[in-house]
Each structure stands twice: as structure tokens, then as C-alpha cells.
Image 1 (cartoon, one colour):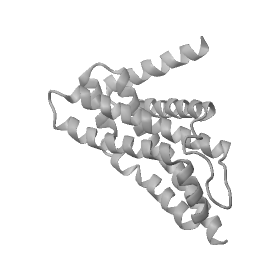
Image 2: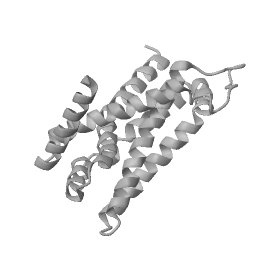
Image 3: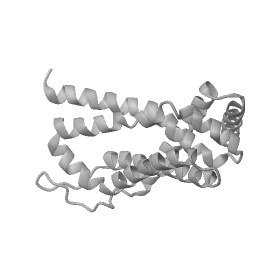
Image 4: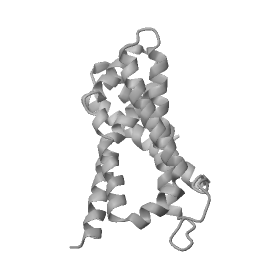
Length: 201
């Protein structure tokens, strides 16, 4: 088995682990926008507190594997996905800052919750847009990216971004029902039941 195949397997494994582990984390963050009770929001954040800050490690490992195993593809994809990658990194950074500040704030906790939720939503949207960009392809000329960095933002990619956020929110609901306390489980149950009825309607 040669190095590119091993790198491809490891990158697929790292991305799968990221989606499963950081997906519920981003989903719980997005669900903060739907919860008005500060005590329930605190419990929602507590449900992801032990694991949330280490989940991005899988994304870093996938990026490093892409750079080391497929440098030509890395040189083409990064310029093509430059804008959504920056949006994702800024959003993940805002999540980290807001997570720490909300624990040290008594008067502005709601605002930090909004920042954390917005960072979760925009990170999911950016990842969906990147996935859409990979599916629809990029303009390449002589082994170099020849398009515009905004080519990624097609209707298909934006729709895929919304779908990724919805999928993360579903993972977040599942996590709250599995790990949350009574109040968070009730909120997760109500949210999932409401989404089910809307989809049937």
C-alpha cells in the first residue's frame, strides 16, 4: 500500500471523526439560538464542555494530511476555497473566545451565547459551502487554480451549507437527549418533534 492511499484513508477517517465529534458540538451551539432560558443554555453548554475544545484536532489532522500527502491538490483547493476556509476559521475562533468569556460574565452571558451560536452556524455553513465547492469542481489551468475564490458560492453550495447546519443540529439534539439533564432532554425532544411535524407538513 503506497503513501497516497494511506494518506487518503487517514484523511477520510479524520474527516469522519470530525463530523461525528465536532458535529454535535456545532449543533448544540446552533441550538442555543432557540433556547431563551439561561439556565437551560448553561446546561446545554455544560453538556459539550468536556469535549468541545479537542474536536477540532481532527480537522487540523485532515488538513495536514492533505498538505503532506497531496501537495498539488492542496495548492489548488486552498485558493479555490479560500473565502469559506477563512469564514470557518474565524467562526471557530469566535466560538472559542465566546465559550471562555461566557463563563466569566454574569451580565453579558446572553450576548456571548449569541456569538457562540453564530460561530457554530457560520462554521457549519462554511463547511457545507466547501463541500459543495469540492463536488461542483474548480477551474484549473496548468495545475493551478484559475477561477475566482467566490466561485464556490453557488446556489448548490449554499443549499448544501444549510443542509450541513441542519445535520449538525440533528446531531446536537441527539447528544442532548443522550448526555443532557432533564431540562435539556425535554428541549431536545421538543425540538426534534417540532422538526418532524414540520417535515411531514
